[in-house]
Image (cartoon, rainbow, N blue to C red; front, side, top):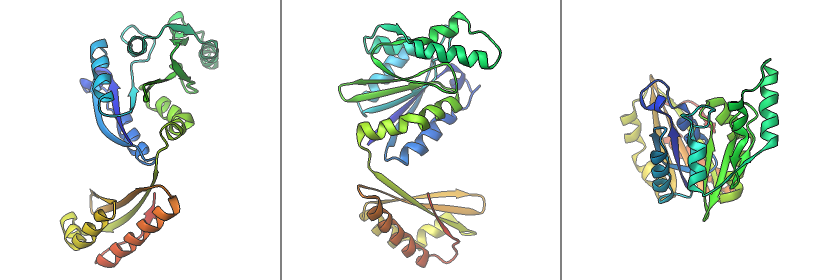
Length: 257
């Protein structure tokens, strides 16, 4: 199962904002068996959004978009998606009530521009944003899905954790993923690779993956496998980790992820 991530915003392209969303999505999608095939950042332009969608859908069935859902005129993602999916708009009272409640909670009245965020494409499944005013939008067409979310990191994470991860798993029947990490200290990456050469070859031949994750003074070795049955997958990975520990001269403990 592969996905692509599209981040929208000129502020990212000119370096004013760092794209932490993609890193978080990539890591957490991997935990449910979805591998990110590509990440692209584009400007707030209709032509760029439409082109990026077409390109992504030519390669994968799931696209996650962040950004461009604010109340200002430069936020055009919602309108562009409605155009792409040939959808009219409707006024979602539940979303409007949530926006009003949100502003009342901070002692303010919503502006007309804020309430216009309750105007949503008819062809999307609305994912209520409990931490902000821009709703998530789930579109489906010909077996392909695009999930559009606000670019504010804590809002995006809230949507994913509250419902989108589960919705992805139910829609695409994602496989079981199991990771286990070995933490090594005081041994360089090349030395570890030499010590584990034969073991790593056998590991990959058995359908498992190994990632070397170096940092100052230590290297983490992440063993991962995608399977259908969790317990069987876990046993296979645990066995390989034990074999690796026997190969290494300097290791500390291993931890589940």
